[in-house]
Length: 116
Length: 110
Picture 1: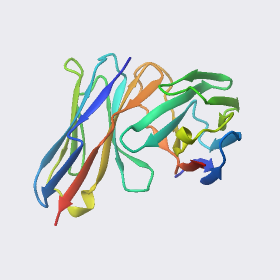
Picture 2: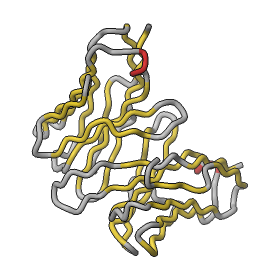
Picture 3: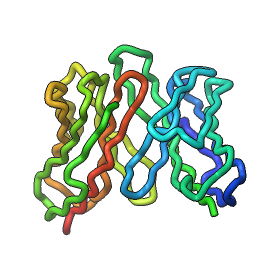
Picture 4: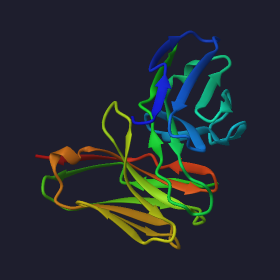
């Protein structure tokens, strides 16, 4: 997807190991989001960022942490992966600047994580 | 807490029919509402975005409406085609969070 790169695209890991997923954008957008997608649950917001070092929790943040040290990168970390965190993880960016301005949410291609 | 519901969860219709997908949300203090399409095993593609001040948006055979006061949006697809088969998701933007419904899985029968 234009402007957004997720890495790795696929990862298999074992329970208890740390995992970091990276989202990189070339659009210089302010807002970045991490979602997970699971059958029967749709997309659920994990964490989001509204600027460098500015992050907040979403709907399902337990077990996850994030960091954003520069505009272009938003990292999602599973400190100690569990089987319940097996999922497809999507990063998204938005150019929203506040108020009610229009902002299209644009997604990365997704990262499929399997925790054994 | 914003909750977004999409009904029906799945829908099958013959090719050529017009159809309506529904999205409802509990908190009317939204900035915008966006409709997405997702093909199996793929990412999400934005279809239409409606700002909170707008009532509808159109793109080709697609028309999305928004009624903030009742907490509803509809996606109308005219003259459906087999290529329209996909999952359609709505996403509601309020404050800084963007919350999704679970989607409607659409199957167009040739």
